[in-house]
Image (cartoon, helix red, strand yellow):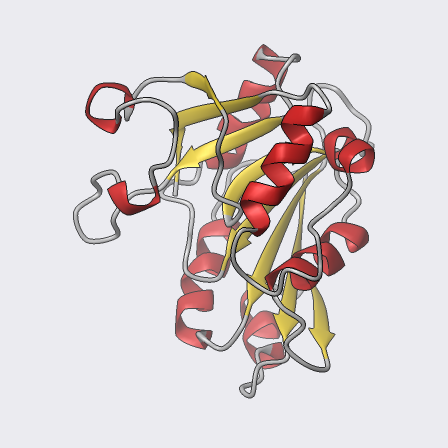
Length: 207
């Protein structure tokens, strides 16, 4: 298979890490369990004081580890992973967000295949203890009580739990690195929408 294959595109899963070694272990485990095989894993360590190299060598020896010398912030960290990625589909995960089932990458590829007009997928964020929708991250333009389990076009996504087509970031730019952390998702959302790209909330893709 080649990265440009339409039926099985290469999916790059980019995980941003800072400290939280135990939480990262759960994320890596969930990515390794994905049934979709045509994937690469990139972990960007944002200057943590605890090493994760041994963790990756044990759990995901094929993963690419990018070790930044200092904490450069969420934007620069994600951008480092995006620059290294080879996939046509890019997924960015924070180190405390993991896939709920082994089928989430399949669902990402299916959603993009079904909706060629969409360039960003927003995942459902569920509470780890209850499995219920995490309302605190809900900033979509519809009421979560009515639309939390429904697919719809949105003007919002959580940067630590989403997927992009590569061409969207190539056209509108990556994360704005002077924003160390906070508002980076909103800034990118505005540019994505301004370039005419569309965002789809997909509750079938669960994290």
